[in-house]
Structure formats: structure tokens, C-alpha cells
Length: 302
Image (cartoon, rainbow, N blue to C red; front, side):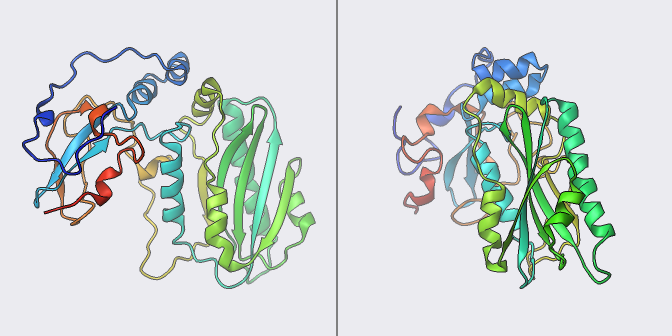
């Protein structure tokens, strides 16, 4: 694997590389499993994840590579990036000065798309139960993320604010039949708790990761309910799709078949609008051995 130069010229001969007409065969275990679940687009996107780049250029002639990624929560390459974006997004929530609750709710059963859908409804119904029996002046709000810690278990990690009652039996009753763990945390630990909420820890088995992608295909893993206060001048983006996780990304994973697949980019240095200046290119010549595709963050500019 070659190390790219610290600056790419718009006339660099690598930018004339021919677009690959024939798609490479799907060979990775996770992509093959997605294909077995009839998730053809996701399988193709996972196979091509970080295998290709688009070169972008701004008005000041800064040129840098943008890797083609699959945007899948259970992708080893994309999962951490998605977790970081979720933390940045929901850091706009203001839980106030009072302590908040960090709750883990687990249920056991045979994993399936139906179980995943029913589990989400179960968590939402429990929150509605808390609202129904809350103090008259209470303004409850919650943010939760669903994880798959084992082959026979789903767990919701949930941050709850605005509830002044805080009786453990209250939460056991809200999610009757589930294993419930509750801890009280001071308001200044909200950011730290967000990192734990969206912790990037994927199963080691590639086939199981693909199964998890199948279980949650078209279903939300991240939810907000109730009263949502935001820090000043940090508005939370409104939901623009039916999938809360996908609202940060294009609704359908791009397979790299179109030359202008990535839009709305701005130069990481001068923040001016940028446009794609190439077809998709093989990524090997643009990936730094240690820094991946982020090597351009510190290259010298004119």
C-alpha cells in the first residue's frame, strides 16, 4: 500500500484513472450473508465500502479524497463513524441541572426482525407508562439506543430526564418482564453517558453482524420521546426519514455507480463548497497506512 503525497495537484495523473466498469464479485463473509438475506444493495455497498474514493476540489484548489462508505451500523469500518456522529448530534440535548437516569433494559428471545420491532414498541410503551403516572408538573424526556449484546438478547440503553420520583419499582413496573438496571448520574456526565449510549462494540462474527443488519433493516435503533430541551443555538436536525439512524445519511446506501454520488461537501480547510472532480477511483493510492483517509487534515496548503 503506497503512501500518498502530502498534497494532490488537480493535474495529478492518478485522477485520470479509468472508472471500473465491471463490479468486483461479492466475496466478504458479511456481504455474502447480507446477500443471503436478500439485502442486495446493502451487500454491494458493504463489499465496496472504502474500496473506492471520489476526489473533491474546492474553489481554492484544495483536493482531497472522500471514501465511498456503506453507512451501515454493523459495518466494522462505518460503525465507529456513525457512533461519533450520533454523539455530536444528540449532544445538543439539555437535560438541565438536575441528575438524570441511565437505564439498561434487556429482554431475551430468538432474534428476528419481528422481535426487534416488538422490542422497540415495548420500550416506547414503558416510557408512555412513566409519563402517565408521573408527577403533575413533570416533563419527561428520553433518548435511547438499541444494541445487540448477544445472540439471544436485545438491550436498550436509555437516558431519562425530568422524572423526580425515581423509584426503582416504578421502572420495573414500566418494563415488566424485562431485566432493568438503573443508575442516577449528575448532569455534567451527560456527554460521557452519550458515548456509552452509542458505544461502538460490534460482534466479532461477520455473519452475525450481517444478521443484526437484517434484524434492524428498515427499523429504528435510536429514538427520542417526550420533552426535548436543546442548548441555545444548537438546534437538533429534524427527522427527514423513517429510520432515525439513517437520517444522518442518504436513505439508500450508495453503490458508487454514479460519478457525483457525494454532494453537499465543504473543504475541511477553508470551508468553501466543493465538487466531485473524478469518477470513482481505487482507494489504495489515497489511503494513508496509519491515518486512513484523514491524512489530508494536516497536509500543507498553498
